[in-house]
Length: 190
Image 1 (cartoon, rainbow, N blue to C red):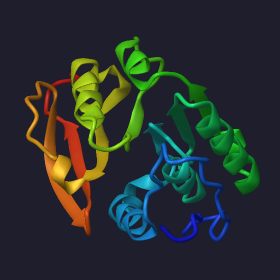
Image 2: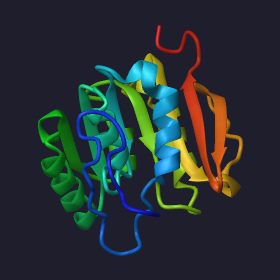
Image 3: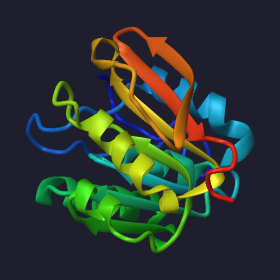
């Protein structure tokens, strides 16, 4: 795992607290670096929905690199406390919303805003990633026509999904970690 820290932008070098216990798996630095190399041209002033947010590492990285807003959605008390502490420590709390809520309940609600990026990194090997993508597919009101939905899973978890409104457009593998990129199909949100 190594030390968890912000790797770029205005909060670069700030260390982040980990969530106590074994319930979360922070993104590895090499995967986070690869992710932000891919999204770099689109990060400035973007909005992020960080689902199963854990430590908040991905949303905090986005804010550090110029995103205008990150909403962190996490069910667990310890994780919510960790996210809030990490936001305070990095000085990014004023651009963040931390929602302690079940991700699936939130995704089933009427969207209160749209996001440029949705990052999904749930507990592994429970098929929660697929359920979250399918929930967004059923309720694309959270997205704009050029939103990206990015999934972080163990590469053995991947399976093709039957989707009406989203389509897979890229898959990248970093060791055992896979990032899958979905976008809204043309015409869906017209």
